[in-house]
Amino acid sequence: MNKLLITGFEPFNGHLLNPSQLLVQNLPDQYGNFALIKGVLPVQHALAPERLLTLLNDHHPDAVLAFGLASSRSKISLERVAINLMDYRIPDNTGVTITNQPIDPSGPAAYFSTLPLETLSTALNKAGLPTEISLSAGAYLCNQVFYTLMHAITIQQSNIPAGFIHLPALPEQSAPSPEAVPAMPLDMLLSAAHLIIDILSQTRAT
Image (cartoon, rainbow, N blue to C red):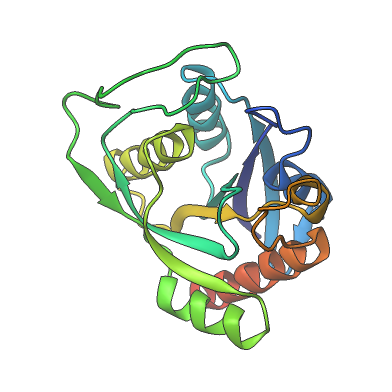
C-alpha cells in the first residue's frame, strides 16, 4: 500500500483552532489505496521544518499534502510556488520574528509544487468546493515548510507528488468578526481532502 504524508499546523496568532490540524486529526488512517501518515506541526520556525523532515525520513511517503490556515482567504488555495524567504509578518508561537532571511542560503530561489494543480482545481470546483491556484504561499511558516518539503524531495530525487494547500478559516473562527471573509466548514474541507486523495491515488496508479 502507498503511503501518503499529510500535515497540518497547531493554532497560532490568537486562533483557538486551526482547520488544518482538525482536518488531519479527522482523516482516517487509511483512505483508498493510501495509508495515511498524519502529523501536526508546531508553529515554531525551527521545530516545524525539523518535524517535517523527521516524518519524511521515517516514512518515505509516496505523496505529501501539507495544509495550513490562511484566514483571510475564502477559497481552498493550491499553492504553486515555494520561495526561499522567511519574512514573518507575525511572530511564531515562541515569539520569534524573522525578517528578510533565506530559508536555505545555498538553496534555489524557489520550487514548484509537484501536485497536479490544474486537475485538482477543476475537480474541486466541479464538486462545489471553492478552490483557486495561488501563486504565493507567503513568507511565513507555511511557505517555510513548503520550501523545506520540496527541497528535501529534490535532494532525495524523489519523484513524488507533493505540495502545500492553504485552507480558509472555519465558521466558528470567523463568525465573531463583522468583516470576516466567507469561511468553510470542516465537512467541506474533509470532502476536499478526500477528493484530492482520490485524484492522487489515480495518479500513482498510472
